Length: 100
Image (spheres, rainbow, N blue to C red):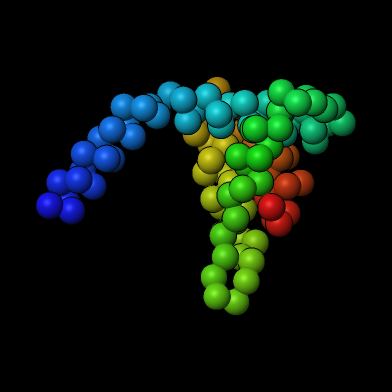
């Protein structure tokens, strides 16, 4: 019974949040964070994108894992197919290991 409910829930979530929405959020994060690395600010329009990026934090029982956090954040930004890999590298270089 639990398996059926879980499966139904996951299918429902898939309908509500399609992959294109997630990719759009990644592209928004790339745009906002690249602007931030070059000295510009997106203001209130970039708060949700920055929050999504900086909320990706990997930890274990000993604390913060900067390498795994960097990898997870880079994977998130790579969901934006149209993003320049050099821009993603610049973002990760500056903000990849920063604690959320």
